[in-house]
Image (cartoon, rainbow, N blue to C red):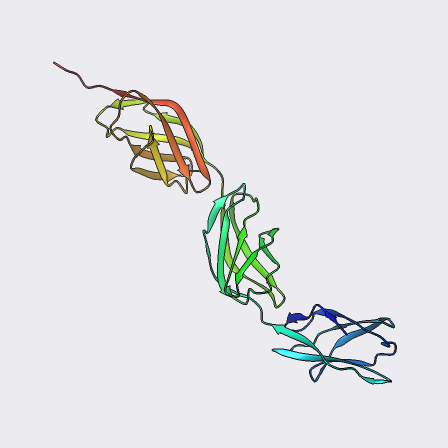
Length: 246
């Protein structure tokens, strides 16, 4: 006499289906010693019931006028608990692999990032990984759903890829040290600015403005800015000027 699902929340409320024979006239379904609610005779071979609250593994029995069945196992699962997720930011395009640490993850079936859901890979009861779905820029709550229920409390921040529009001034000394201002959008999580691939020290002024000091260089070079979601490049945007010689 199988039962499906064979696990559910310790808080109760799991709708289970019991299949077998001679189930007509079922008067009670018990999870251990506790009575199930909403018992319904679907057919002579099928009964549905809603589990009461409980803990651990219990035997489920079904009673009719002909007697009581042998017990079949049902496992109560506690709600998951999340401790951390990493990384906590990623592109609005999605695709970032997120690791979530906590407890009670063995039966995880979905992870929601705001209104968007993804199917996780269970690594262990204390860890799962999931590929973030696409989303809109900003922070969203992250919810893990298991047989034991749901848990939220952590957040994930979607970041739009940067757009680099202008640089000022567009030229400076070959020895470096020229202070330039980059303008565009998506600069809040900037983690690198380069001139011809050479990293430059920078300061984020706002989501639309970054200040950087040029490294030494020669010729006309590309300028690139990278944030947590990707990179943007202005081709041939800065020209190094040789100093005067006498």
